Length: 274
View (tube, rainbow, N blue to C red):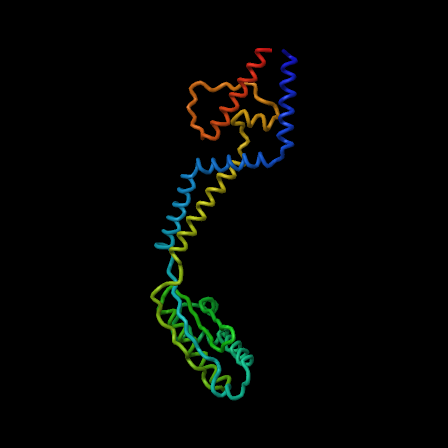
């Protein structure tokens, strides 16, 4: 009998060596399959996390976040006099850059604040305004964002008026042309409620998947005889089921355990015959 036990151990060690020689691809496939079934088993947790995150973000976007409105004024910085003297577009672009610097001048910002009786400091007002100059053009876009649509329109138009007046008085040039005055916006540019809800749902789902994956990786419990053989390298001789156990397992695990029981019983039969 001891010789048979020793032979079984040798057979088990050889089988473990064969599995190791076969490479890590088989084990990787099994682990990925187990991970897939783990995700399937917890699919409702993933869905619940996605829905919860989407609802929370939706509540914030619809009821808590303050809407931001934007208004834009456009001016053409090339005056009639400069058109006679400047011969190329590059000089006109440089002149546009000079005009942009006017919006950073403290006196210009203070005059806008005084004219509109705004409750902002110069720095706060500077953060509300955005200047853009489309490539290869001499058009300056003056965009202002505010929680008040009317205020955004008034600030954009006031900046346009004061800067044009400053160019005329200090640069001794003809006043730039107004291409378009800012209009009151009826639709806020922020927050984008639909996009926020979608992003919230996706982030919630990925967060749940990440937690499940982390728990799967950190779970080092031996759940079957196959796990024991994989970690220890010794085949299982017998499996004793727990009396009264009513745990529900996925078909994948059940099939693996059924195969293991058949193999173990076959080995037991051979050992008894010996």
